[in-house]
Image 1 (tube, rainbow, N blue to C red):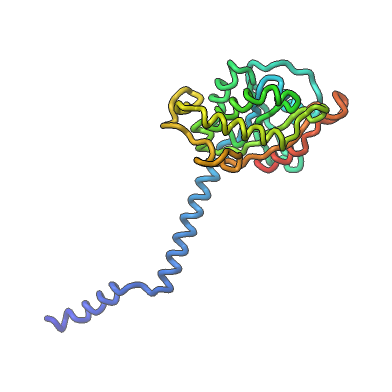
Image 2 (image 1 turned 45 degrees about the horizontal axis):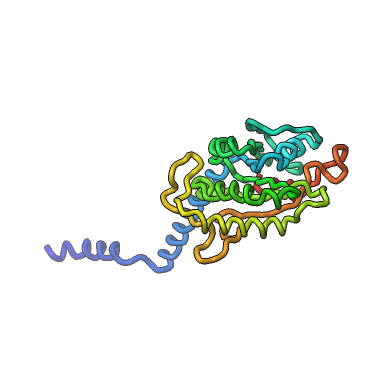
Amino acid sequence: MAGRLEPHLEALGRELRPPDPAVLSVLLALLAVAITLLIWRFVQGRRSSRKAVLLLGLCDAGKTLLFARLLTGKYRDTQTSITDSSAVYRVSNDKSANVTLIDLPGHESLRLQFLERFKAAARGIVFVVDSVAFQREVKDVAEFLYQVLVDSTVLKNAPALLIACNKQDVTMAKSAKLIQQQLEKELNTLRVTRSAAPTSLDGSATGGPTQLGKKGKDFDFSQLPMKVEFVECSARGSKGEEGDADFEGLEKWLAKIA
């Protein structure tokens, strides 16, 4: 009886033997590649579902003129917006690459309401700053930007952020470098003075105080989960209504994220 079972036991022993180390290494490498591809497809799928670029900023920052110039290239007189405007923007050297530009109202009573509606679809955010009025409006600009940056949806999706320092055609305009320094200072002050837990734009708590930047360090934009860039631009342009806008940096940024 034992003799008859011996060949079967030997065969079973061979099958239960540990796999060859080289084969095991190959299998593990293939598994790692498969997991990486699945994660990449998941991230790309989430990104491709977000096609909007939101134009944010205070009233009179020049958002609507930037919106019109990007789409038509032409100057037009604008008024304070009370609703959103949207259109498809196609990258000039690649017509297959496009995003949906959405110009949101900047009035204090409307801006958070409209941002709440569109924030989940944002692939990028262009935060437009009036470089001429900046010194006077710095606290209001920083307050609005702070509300955007601590929002739970914005933190989760981490859309690319461009601070567009507009109206650079005016002599008294502040530089992008100075605007960045002043905003970092004001945002640092805001995060220190806020004692209550920030809320999301829909008014719900985010699950406790959101730490803007790194604890124990003065705030700077490099500490955020999204990439932040600054550009100087002029929707009006240095030659006025008859000339072209000056926003090459903005166009390059849009082409990069499209």
